[in-house]
Image: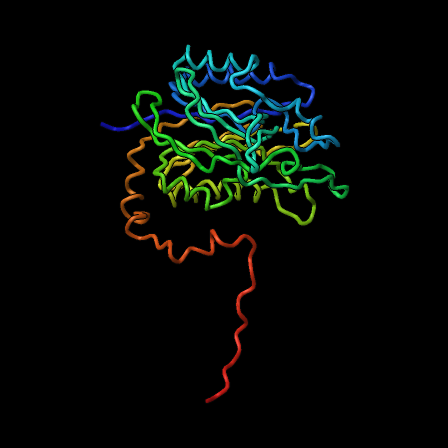
Length: 331
């Protein structure tokens, strides 16, 4: 029996700073309904889907930014999404800013902030949570930048690793599902950790600007799109999995966002792509049995991986210079 599921990337157009969560949730509910009419069984929303991408704005006191965070999930504002999931029998992935009281490195509880995502099942259960690990940007106000990118200021590095869970979704009794967020997709280590847990379907949301707003070098718009897609396509191919990569798009708070949401198969092929900079649903049917080919041939990890030669990956952070070649004196 084929293991098929219909998935959707529910791209969101811009959410302006002045718009309340209720506006974003109402738009997401419409997208859920639209996806359901197409037979979709799992919908993926973008990173920080409930608000504008607030890390572009500087607050002298970090607590001033707490207005953008969620302290409970579901909350009063997001409960309609969970209710819709139950009513429609559809799962969804939601990215949001998480504020919690949780033990830190010292073991004492303190206020903590994460860039998070959850996977919700068709009965409204939270099946899995992920907290973004590869935080881009900077931690202090940079006067040289026209637009700030302060993820390192407002978020801690995620502390849940890259988890995968096998859970029912759609008509299937079990799918191996994992998550990542935005910049994580550019790091092959993230994909490989999911691949080593036999992830069949990777869910990720992103808020990527169309331009390199740091202004330290030119990167053409078409290359921004290419690099985003290349990262997902390579990750899927090298780990024999499907991925749903969902963007925010359009001009938000004066900043242009990339869009170009995609669904990718285990061959690294884009099988669906958004064509607008607005709210848009793209869907694709995924035959999860396709994952088997890569896992049993080129990327049969148990046969071909050589972790004893990869220790530099986990023991070293920055790049180092190699030895300089020198001609040996004749003996």
